[in-house]
Structure formats: structure tokens, C-alpha cells
Length: 123
Image 1 (cartoon, rainbow, N blue to C red):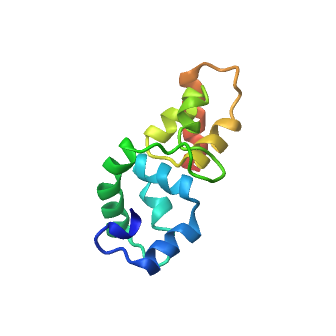
Image 2: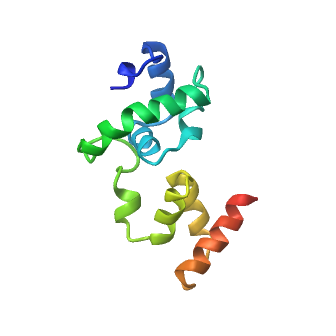
């Protein structure tokens, strides 16, 4: 799927999948996380946006639960942690969101957890 994107060849495809795991790549595409994709050498912001644009619809219909990697694609949204899901929807990567929410007191209300996590991410 990746090398089917205009401007992505074998070299860039390998660079992307060497930088992030397949599950994190799929999550980056689904959540519009341009920064995760452009970390790979040879990938700028325009190419990262093109990859997301061309692959987003293909990933929506695919079953991504079987992708090997550190985290399942649905894990962020099925974990029951609405604060993490909210941060991912705002454009933060799942890893950043989980780390920021973990540093916040879970006894607080959801809105307060999100506010404090956002403050931590802004630093």
C-alpha cells in the first residue's frame, strides 16, 4: 500500500517502516499525524500529507488488528481512556497522549485531565 502512493518508492517506504512500526504508521495515517511520518529520512511535510491523504480511506476499511507491533491500532480508542482519545483526536500521537495523561491524576474529572495533559504537552 505504501509504495503505491505517488512519490513513495521502495527506498522511502523502507525508511518510513524503519523509523516507526507498521501499527504506529497505520495509527499515524488514521489520526493525521504528519510529524510521525516525516521523521523518516527523505519524507517532508508535503509527502507525509500525501501519504495520509491517499492511504486514509484504504486503512478505514481494512482490519488493522492483525498488524504486528507494540500497540494495536484500536488500542488507543478501546482502552477506555477518553482523555488519551481526546488528545489523539486533537492531533497528538498516541504515545505522546498516553505519556501526558499518565502524568496527570486519574481521580480528576475528564476535562481537567485533558487540560493538564495539554499543558504538559505544550511545554
